[in-house]
Amino acid sequence: MAMKVRSLQRHLREGVKNVFRNGWMSVASIAAVTVTLILVGVFLAVMLNLNQMADNIEEDVEISVHIDRTAEETQIRELGKQLEEIDKVDTVIFSSKDDELEKLIDSMGEEGQAWELFEQDNPLNHAFTVRAKNPDDTVPIAAEIESLDYVDDVIYGKDVVERLFEFNKYARTIGLVLIIGLVFTAIFLISNTIKLTIMARSKEIGIMKLVGATNGFIRWPFFIEGMLLGIFGSLLPIILILVGYYYVDTKLSSQITFNFVELLPFNPFAWQLSLLIVSIGAFIGVWGSVMSVRKFLKV
Amino acid sequence: MILMKDIYKKYPNGVTALNGVSLNIEEGEFVYIVGPSGAGKSTFVKLIYREEKPTKGSIVINDSNLSDLKEKEVPFLRRKIGVIFQDFKLLSRLTVYENVAYALEVIGENPKNIRTLVMDVLELVGLKNKSRFIPDELSGGEQQRVSIARAIVNRPKIVIADEPTGNLDPDTSWEIMRIFEEINSRGTTIMMATHNKEIVNTIKKRVIAIEGGRIVRDQDRGDYGYES
Picture 1 (cartoon, rainbow over the protein chains, first blue to last red):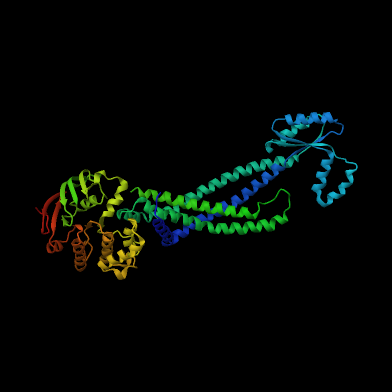
Picture 2 (spheres, rainbow over the protein chains, first blue to last red; picture 1 turned 90 degrees about the vertical axis):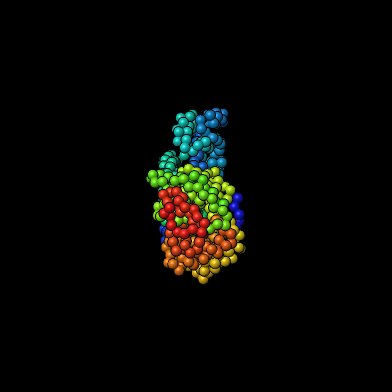
């Protein structure tokens, strides 16, 4: 695609001019991009955060296997071996009752200091911490562990984990389907809008060809025009997302303090999302205009 | 310069527009194509800049045979031929200046030269002071002159005009003929399809009369008329 810089400048100038020459049609196209990208942006922000939360929860899911106090050292070792042999188990880590107490004290923060009294007479059990290769398998693995000897208790937040995994699975699938559907609807809408502006210009394209313009020469300004429409259309969505996300991130997350509800940090997430939005916008615009102009170039 | 041999043109709807036309036009000639409406004048003109392809026969322009021309090469043929259309075919959203400049941008002319070239040619057609107007703000004669300016701005060797005075009043028509004579005197080959008897009979040039898709008369410094 050897093109002189001079020609590129000319096409850029022409593309910009076309946006203004088309007046209200350009406004309509930009509005279509804007509406779509706001929806896509909100969906992406919600979905990516849900995904992130799901990942956080999944990473946190470990099975704590409390060992019967009567178990001897060899029996404990035997149990450890059995745990490792279970299918789909990733890691098995022994943690003595002193380690367990320390973890508990750490997790309680200030209040935990009260528990330091127990260091003399530790009421906790020795435990194994088991992680599944795939967090989805946590529930069956836990069930299998419960049937082993010298297991006192198996703890993994049964209900919470089960429900969260279900929810995440559906949320991800539904979100993905919605986003793909939305983007395709947008492309369709926009290519139609741009097609209308080009339809009105099909006579113009005919004249350009009669004057000796090559297809490439005719196409470039349309390419740039489409890209500009897409980029202009993404400006408002980006502003809304930056402002909205900043608000949610600062105001809301200080009010809701579940340890797993942690939003992706504004920086860099909101910027990355903006970049993605402007790219989608430019892609939609270019795609729409190039597809529509193609038809008229075949004349 | 323009060489046609046994050209037949039959349209898909069954109409035969040209029925065996052969001719040779030399460089620097000024040729009128005359004939009644529907005689095939417009088809004849369209064949040269490849808006239509002949059903049979060969056309050679500037030593290149149009039958061998690939789709991709068509734009480059058109750049060598300035075409003036009866309905002007101006880009309605561009100014006079931009319309003329377009023909130069297409060929990749250096932008530094475009302004001078465009303004010079607008001066030649007498529209220098209307360069910022859009076509709708101009009279028919002025639009025709813009179309002429666009056709000649890149100095093509051949200029083809399809009834350039068809929509114009007599005074404007003479004005336009003056421009044609001027560019012809610079060595440009001119081929003009026309119905204007007065012009043909006053400004004497070679006359090719077409009727029923055939050349019925080909005469230097001929008069208007096609009844053989």
